[in-house]
Image 1 (tube, rainbow, N blue to C red):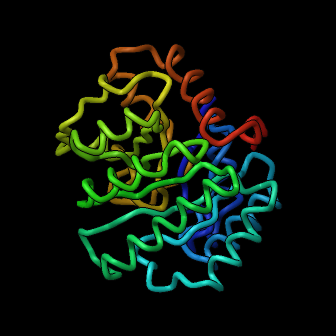
Image 2: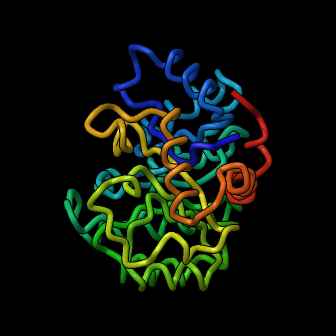
Length: 259
């Protein structure tokens, strides 16, 4: 059985057919979906979905694109949400220097505040990194020993962040990018320890081959898991139980609930 470790199921792209999306996930042997909060409002939607449906968990955080919205009020609201039993992690947080939708100082301040929340509340932290490996690595090293787990989501970084992640026992979560013809990782998929691997969709974004170009959805995490098994020269039946166990290790026993 499979866990989609990172999905924006609260996104408006799913408003018209969310029940059908979850039905297709069940048919694809996806038993649990971690619904990501990328803003205060998005975190509230994620929590509401997790409360409504077995097999869904939520995270609560503010994406680096939204770092200008970080405030004392936002932090208070996230604290409230993080106290809910359906919320298994802080985030999505991190740094994105590709788009720079928020000034980098604001991104770093918000990211470190999320890490501090994870340390204080005993929650894992879901981390986004794009063209910011050195700064993400430095902050991960500074805080990772104080939080239960760090999840490096949609991992596509180079050796510097990989080494930092390995040093602190982070989880490496892979998305549909590993199915793309132009996927040229500096760190091969075979280099990741088996007990540190996760798979995700990042839906509705990054649809894997053969769905590339369309809307992504949780059922397609199966294509990611198949690609990962091929890259590691493993049978899916040998890899997938490990992936599910890793998801429970990262996010906790709530992930034993099923869709």
